[in-house]
Image 1 (spheres, rainbow, N blue to C red):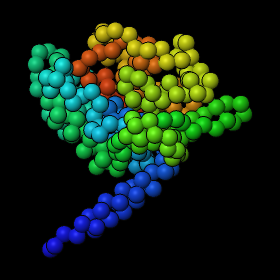
Image 2: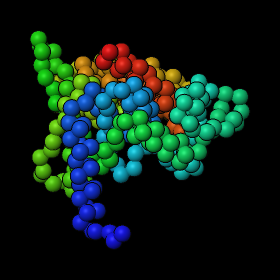
Image 3: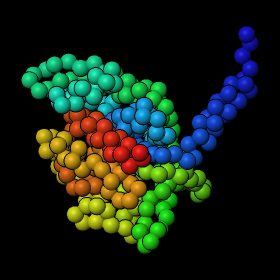
Image 4: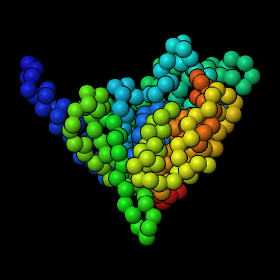
Length: 262
């Protein structure tokens, strides 16, 4: 068979826009394709919840790719092993309570699991704002404003597009970008001690891992926070290249969203 150059282009355009059009209204919009949201997207997709994931970078996976200082191994604590086993990620025992995984295998497996569960990942798409509505005096996030990430990087004045979502999960990592937008642009108080994004503290792996899970939840009506974004929003420590808390945060977010949606 002789390949037709234009048919190749048509196939890409047709199928991409079918995928995008199907996600203009979703139950859950995930912002940031780090480990927490990859787990959340997988579990929601497997439960039949209409979910889409938006990642501003070319490669989904967040900071897990590089392991610790570009040594592509990560540490997982024992409490997260059952979840990784469900995702078919292999681990190796190191010392009591410590396990390692190849970061490239881990990220690629999580990405594949998410997409195969029915949650599409739109990379190179940046969330630049949120949609909100007001009911009986209460503001609520009810969608996202999207732009191509290269358009944002180039500083071009191009209007964005919007999608509607019953719930949004900020999994944008250290910047907690969606929480910052809501706090800054909606003059709204988040469910934090200050009512605003408090910013992450310095490294404390044990405490940071624990609080990543504790801090996961609804931080504003319609807006959940997960992963490192949860600690950044709540003012908790960072934890470095140990990822059990991130993974369990995604599992907790999915569980809480399922209760809301059902």
